[in-house]
Image (cartoon, rainbow, N blue to C red):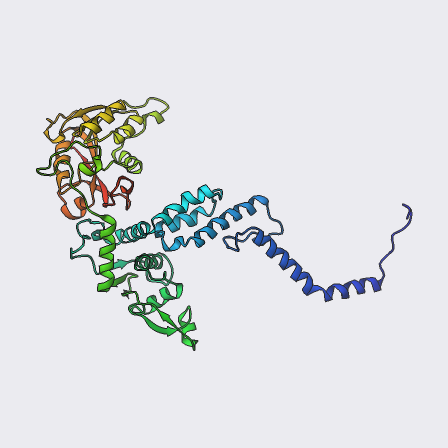
Length: 454
């Protein structure tokens, strides 16, 4: 055909024939489109694990979005395969869900670093999850002394706000409590319809029983089938103000007591226990019960005390502060103070640890802090005193005399100092559950800030 030859014009019959042919093929064309969409969606998931839709109603998909979705799907598939939801705390689960919005690269090393600790010691994570959940419910659950085995007085109920509706924060809190108990007791995690049941009928999860099958009250009313609901030994009373009181039966209360007691452990004696004598040993943590301060706790203490970073000031930074750390150990807190540009002085009873701190360039006196004459020379005191008994009271009260008028003291203390003993007045902040786990203890802790009057 030459350039001057006209293209063949469609006739009326041609148009009708095309219409008839395509009309008959509508279902096949839709099926082909659906198959193509499914192929695209599956290309963006691992083992069919759904996280977010790849297409999201769009005609085109970017390679970047596809790879992001693949990473999220892969992490979610690993999470499900390793059954992390049965091990991780509610706090960790929420953190993981947020991470899926922009997940890191999925590699063996990353997967091992993320999920390995859960699989290596699942019980520790189950216990931590229960402690995190209950510590937010009542001060008694933050007290090491109240959760010891054989000690009576744990609350037989907790108050949950926000239960005025079947959705929202209160429902999530109720779910977290029941799941923390289920993980410890080896029971299945709570299902959506079980939550609906206890919100409709407070006694629904008290004992194991058969109920009509269905996710909602309407479905259950119309159902001819039944299912077994596992008893959780708890019951709920809801009130018109939106609060709910969740009660624990004797078996569940005992489990809470045993789980918290196992997680918190014991506060062991330190070198300054009455009549205790320090012994020469390289096993410092065993002989003198030295619990070094983790970095995350140090950062919180620095912020609480107002030890700002002078090196972050571009113009006219204030003068460095003079800061004291009694019982400074090997100088970890002193490291953080010096890194922020301030002058720090330490006192340490244990000669070996004092030598370690001096080897890092710190000014440290080897002596018993309680025997040192007080001079009000310091702007700030930051301290992590011995936890055993109530020794910390003597340390804190003595340290206050080292402050200048208007100075600030921040002390890391066992939670019993605030929730049980109450011998020291000041501003209290709880530290997260397990803040000292890497140092060898899960004893609940917090920080107390006291200002010396001007």
